[in-house]
Length: 225
Image (cartoon, rainbow, N blue to C red; front, side, top):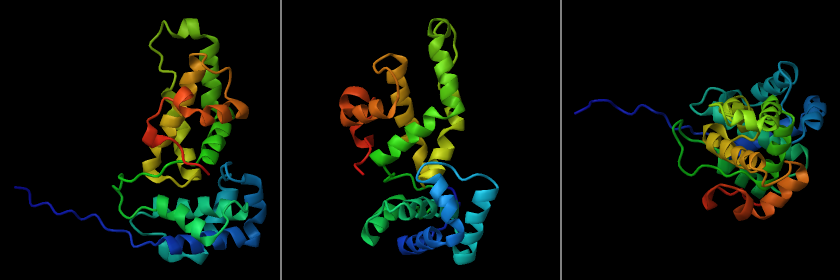
């Protein structure tokens, strides 16, 4: 019998703490131009923009920096700050619901994973169109007859795209399967010519009829919002 003890610590961070931090970041006048530029979906430039956001975050809530799940929970506050700055969250109740859905209390917490909002899926697909990964995918698609004769994995470099999206939307480690599943589902439909492109209009149409267009389970469909 093993004498090992589970030493994993619960993270005491509350949704209210993350909401307070998000409100501070969204209202910080030094960050106003940064939030205006990045909006809901662009990454912060590093080190300049991210460094300024980090400095503001640490000055306001240094006690949140070294908790067991800080690397997952602090991005939730930063994702919420984007929404607050953009006027995308209508009330404290909605803000707390957003945080409660994504907060993590211990590092191996994979049950009850968060679901992406439809608006986030649209943003992720917009980010995809601008990514090196998608340019590579489109090159493969132009050479489809050649590529299908090889063992090339056309999705291999998605590993460079997914983590940034997880961070932008505050999904933490639980977000990998959601982002990867959504993106590959859209790309699969494009690869097999089910849709002509992944323009915003096409993405909107696919989200309106997910059972027809998206190869994802019912429980993984994005939430309205």
